[in-house]
Image (cartoon, rainbow, N blue to C red):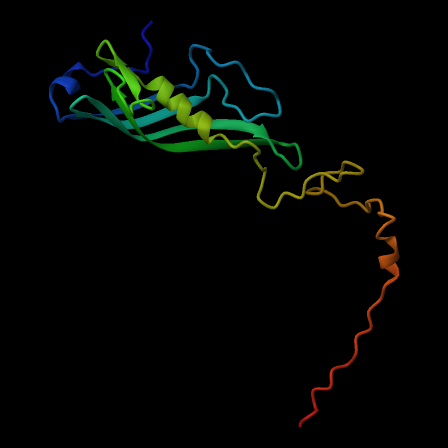
Length: 184
């Protein structure tokens, strides 16, 4: 079975400059190449829909892919440990070349007049995944003493007092009234 990520580009390479619009909606990891990450890591489910919308433009020596790649992800909130769902939408601008020359270390290869959009799409999505997602920007997290979710309830827990600073708890400041009516 041919990969849906393979795009024939022989005509594009022959008729420089020319372009073609590519729109794909395929499973993220159809071949099951990527092992699932640990529960605490942000990941993309292998069957998740991956949307690729790019324009392939030929130039002398290769192709330029411009467009976007989109896939849903899941992870664990770094503050309260609830599951977080999100979508990565990445703007891509990549080059495909026949042979890598000096300065082409980041370019993808054109093989047998086909470009494989899978490595480009996977790289873009994996690099965009949040390392430590939040369920919401103002997440209050878990109480470090009793473990209650501070987004759902409150607790009366207080942290231990550092004895080196305990004497400062007795320090009180007296507010003196300001005499604003003084005029010189």
